[in-house]
Amino acid sequence: MSENYDVIIIGTGAGGGTLAHTLASSGKRILLLERGDFLTRELENWNPKPVFVTGRYISKDTWFDGDGKPFQPQIHYFVGGATKMYGAALYRLRPEDFGEIKHVDGISPAWPLSYDDFEPWYSAAEQLYQVHGEHGEDPTEGHWSKQYAWPPVSHEPRLQQISDDLAKGGWHPFHAPCGILLNEADRPRSTCIRCAWCDGYPCMVHAKSDAEVIAVRPVLGRDNVTLVCGAEVTRLETDSSGRTVTGVVVSRGGEREVYTGDIVVISAGAANSAKILLSSANDKHPHGLANGSDQVGRNYMFHNSKAIAAVCTEPNDTAYQKTLGLNDFYSATKDYEYPMGNIQMVGKSNAEAMRGEKPHLTMVAPQWTLTDVAKHAVDWWLTTEDLPVPENRVTLDKDGNIHLTYSNTNLEEADRLYGELKKILNHTGMAEHHVWRKNFYADMDIELAGCAHQAGTCRFGTDPATSVLDANCKAHELDNLYVVDTSFFPSIGAVNPGLTAMANAIRVGEHIANRIA
Ligand SMILES: Cc1cc2nc3c(=O)[nH]c(=O)nc-3n(C[C@H](O)[C@H](O)[C@H](O)COP(=O)(O)OP(=O)(O)OC[C@H]3O[C@@H](n4cnc5c(N)ncnc54)[C@H](O)[C@@H]3O)c2cc1C
Image 1: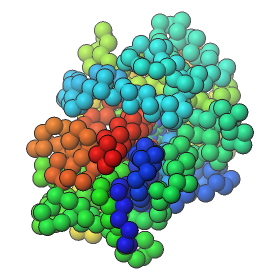
Image 2: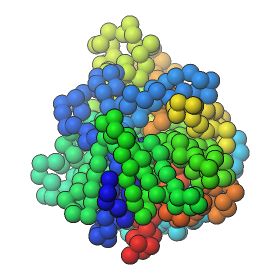
Image 3: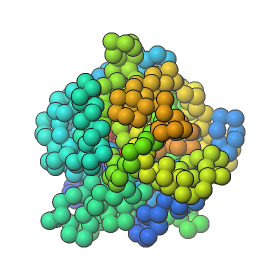
């Protein structure tokens, strides 16, 4: 490839896509390299069977766990990355997440920047991704400089009833921040219809605020932005000093291509960004590019998450179920000295999704039973922070395959959070003692393959001995290499990571724009 670009961005998800959007107006030549393609808009987008049972949108990758056992990661290689499938619950981390927090299993470390440093970027990301919400409702949130530009998405009747019951019981429910496109006047053909096919599904009408729709597509008409799909970056080459990336090696259609750029930004997702760096070992970087600290690939986090279907006598006709959140247990309480985490809703369950998620349990269940169960289910999503443990890490075998070694932390906190949810369910008429007669709960822990919330692996920090990136997300050991995806997280908090990745990409984008101006 003869053309030299000002900036090459690897990956087009929450990090890479948002960065491209931020840099596009600089007029500099931007190249986006994406291993996937555009996700096809087709009827299957909204069909739970291909989405949850046959895995139509999941990559064919094989990764290996710490014992060498193969598994298929639930990872999505498309323009827009994981945001094509995400639930678009776009939360800010809480201010305390930027400081050191004591957990039952250890310390969640401080970030090199504070919530105040991040606040303007959160605000910018909320505007860009058209987040609907109401700052001020959730007592745990930090200060905000701008109210959401779009009002909160109203609850459907069943959720309104639950929200009212929670408030009466002394809890503090709030309207969850939702990234959906509801402005009919602006988007006559692709306005969100608030359907059930959002969380975990691609949006067929492009009405979800994902990175393709919001960040990548709008800049593709510019002369200075080029997108190359089907381009898997396999390795970065450096000059003889090891300080400068001089070539981005790509496998495309079975051919090897090399692209050059003044600045190179990796945003391939936490596991794949580590893979690219580890695969790029050379004489000056014998343990992987930018890995003098031995931190590349380490501190992998993905949240202690649990999905709960509380099946009750009353039907739940809600379609778009992501509107409610509860952070009463986000920090230590008077009854428990450690944080427990966030409670929110997950996409509405259905029979096929239940089969996909619990194939053994549902094998003998007739379709009508599962349909009836799903019709009566209220579906919750619990998130507890997991800690950055150095041994939880991405490594590569001699063939370059990803090995993901991981052990949970803070399981006690996660169990306690579930205990608190059960109290809530009792209070809101979904009591467990009615099991088999009326109400019951089905809970599901998210396994290693469920790497939706992957983060860590290239954390940022001020000390090159203990971090991979500096505060601008530039590699300590290289002059022109940045990492701008969830890899940079030194800790993950207990809310969904997407908005923080987007806010950080805007922040780093402004820094890079100033640098190359
Ligand atoms: C089902 C699901 C639900 C979720 N729900 C939420 C939610 O409600 N709220 C929230 O905040 N977060 C949610 N998430 C998580 C959120 O989507 C991710 O945190 C976010 O997308 C991570 O951004 P990223 O830039 O790190 O990676 P990604 O968005 O995954 O982007 C990585 C990109 O790099 C590309 N790539 C990978 N390897 C290479 C390579 N070698 N060469 C070239 N390109 C490469 C990939 O194809 C992809 O486009 C969800 C995720 C999933 C899967």
